[in-house]
Length: 124
Image 1: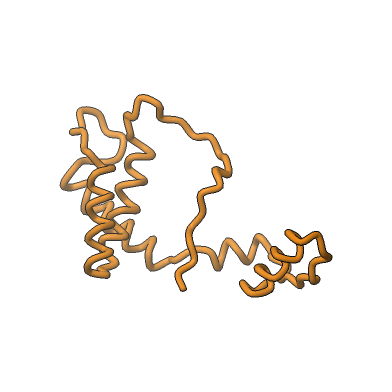
Image 2: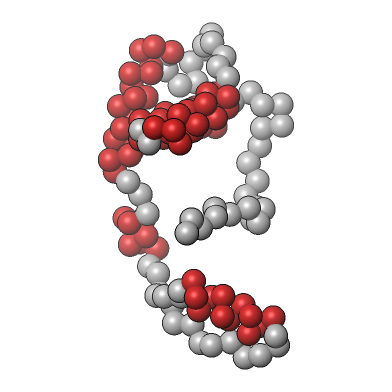
């Protein structure tokens, strides 16, 4: 597995036009990734809250349902999570995002898979 130090060293070697050090990587199996790259507990919390939400707000994709400002709510709940560390806010954000994906009315709504170059930063 590549370490951060090896990655940086190789980056400098590449930048200087020198030969990079070999990197030994772990071969990944997609079947095992489908098992490991998910949280059943998180999904359970999401589903439980979605079921309760159906009673409060109506079932997903139902007619005559109120419109909600889910994006602003997501931002507010992420701020609350950052302040409190309460995972409940993350579950709420996930559900709000999924509901927006299903029911959103954004005028430019579409799905186009691209690598925009925006990635999560490493925290030291």
